[in-house]
Image 1 (cartoon, rainbow, N blue to C red):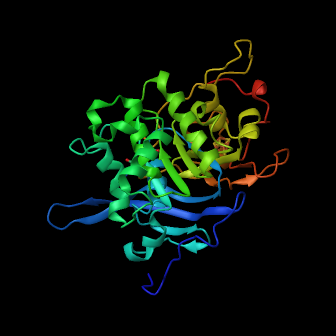
Image 2 (image 1 turned 90 degrees about the vertical axis):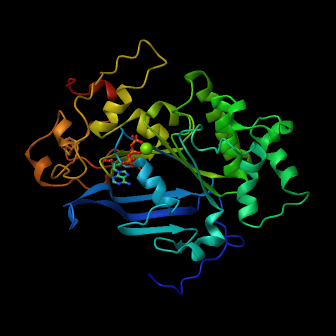
Image 3 (image 1 turned 135 degrees about the horizontal axis):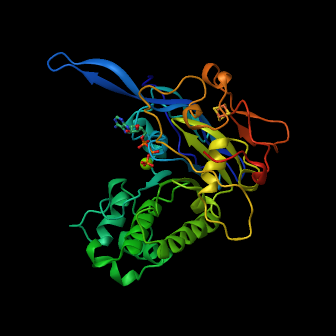
Length: 353
Ligand SMILES: Nc1ncnc2c1ncn2[C@@H]1O[C@H](COP(=O)(O)OP(=O)(O)OP(=O)(O)O)[C@@H](O)[C@H]1O
Ligand code: SF4
Ligand SMILES: [Mg+2]
């Protein structure tokens, strides 16, 4: 890694709407598996993220969906550089940040923020809300016009909380309000990209929509790009312009929202969609019930990683890894990794497993 690498703040050449802001290429994160008591040696690796190509454009929201253990959080942590990639590149606003050190990252650190799943553990219970939201400004030596307190109160208002409550402690707020505090903290440095890792999964269903609406509003009003991580396709449906489906460390399908929901081509996407409750009770699409767990990422299946759970698997699926490509009949930008894809019409799906 080069120490000469210097990164510029993106001001001045900030990508505008539609231009690539974040580009991931062949991104990998393997966690070593160690064995031995005295003399530890590596006996394998968890292939948590295993060759991901993904672009997030300025002001775009990309949903990242998959079952537990598929590598979504690891991918989010690679983007925010909480983890060092094993291989591949992360390009932010045209600059390679894959292995940039703390100092080198400083100018753009504020532009990429993360919102975590658990609003309870991500806020320090001994700090006031004002101190929590103001901390990133303090740490970065930023003194906004009118002072930090004024800025904190503006942020509280932006996220729908009472600006008078900046002296209160996290336990005095409900779960949804605490997640709003987390959002205000992420906004304090005027980010251009927010990685939201299951930001509403820990909340009551009744308040999930409120927080999603808030994030959607912020995306519109402040022009922030989002990588929105979720377990299922229901939550990202109304929030993300494009959706990527991840399975065992790889993206198996990516498309704009309409194309993905209306014409999924990958059997795994089809199965995930089957789990989404339909607004239309007369919908006659065939239901697929996924059985079994995601296999271990320490020793992923050969060929197509989904083959151990796929009802369409054939010999080729075990020997050849399907590339992520545009299939005939797919719209531009709709990529699928499957040797025997669905025909794109949900009603014509094969029998459930
Ligand atoms: N620090 C780590 N060390 C070793 N293995 C890890 C580490 N972090 C994650 N893993 C493993 O990597 C795989 C991917 O984990 P990750 O948390 O990224 O999945 P996820 O899709 O976010 O799952 P969930 O939906 O449960 O949050 C899992 O098998 C997990 O056990
Ligand atoms: S490549 Fe084969 S196993 Fe993989 S999803 Fe397609 S049909 Fe199923
Ligand atoms: Mg996760």
